[in-house]
Length: 121
Image (cartoon, rainbow, N blue to C red; front, side, top):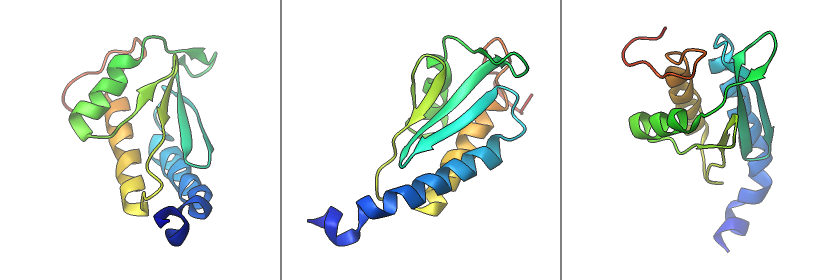
């Protein structure tokens, strides 16, 4: 009843597109990001070891773990992509925080997949 009353299913494509745009903005200068994709509220951030060849960055579970541990953002790994399926109740401010949290961790991740502590690399 609440899902229908609040129009959450109808709202999902709009907020999903907003989150995808925020991810693209926040990750634009991160060379490990090959592509950001979404269908409604299901999103994927493809990670690459080399932006030119788009060779996939393997073994990314520790990156997802770091994002969760440091920022409380729930992401999971799907081989070479970070996958997000946020709640239908997600708001724009939360979407922006998610994008910035992922960007912060990926900005300190090197092409070998190592997440470094401290300032962005």
